[in-house]
Image (cartoon, rainbow, N blue to C red; front, side, top):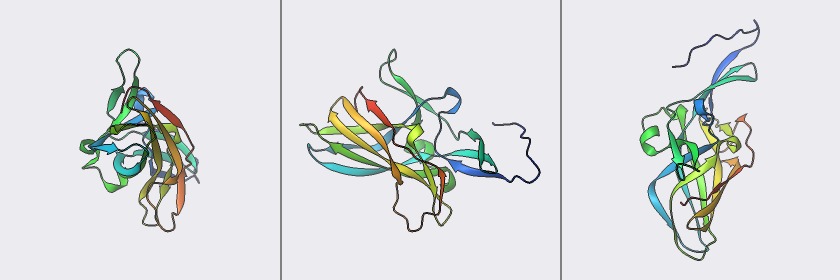
Length: 188
C-alpha cells in the first residue's frame, strides 16, 4: 500500500494517470515478459507478438510527476544467479484481471538474423525507453519494442518511439519514449 502527503500549491491540479511499468522499490531497469506461447522464428524471418503488460500509476501535480506507484510488482532473475539481472516480471497471469486502465498490449517485433530456427519464450525490455500515449477513448498505449535474434543465446531488444497499436488520433503523450537497448545474453 502506498501512503504519503503532498503539499500542493492552491491552483495546481493533482492528477492520477497511467504510467509505463517502473522498476518498483528495487529500482530494476528491465521488464521480463514471459510469452503465453513459445514462438518459433525461422532464419531470416520476422513476426510480431502482442503481450499484455501491467501499467503503474503516476501521481502528477500540474505537469510534474511526483511519484510512481507500482501495480502488482513481481520480480524475476534473468540469467544466472551470480551474474543475472533482476527484472520486473510480467506474464498473462499477472495482468489478466487488471482493469483495462492498468494494462496495455505491447507489440514486440521478433526478427531472426541467425542461421537457425530460434524459440523465443520471453523478452527483456529496457524500462527507461518505454513511453505512454493516451488514445482518443482515454485508454493507455505503450510504445513498441523490437527483438533481434543473433543466436540461440544472444538477442538485442530495443524500445521504439511509436505506440504498439495503430490508433487514429492518438491524443496525448504522457511519458515520452526513447530508444534504449538491452542485450539478452543468457538465452531466449
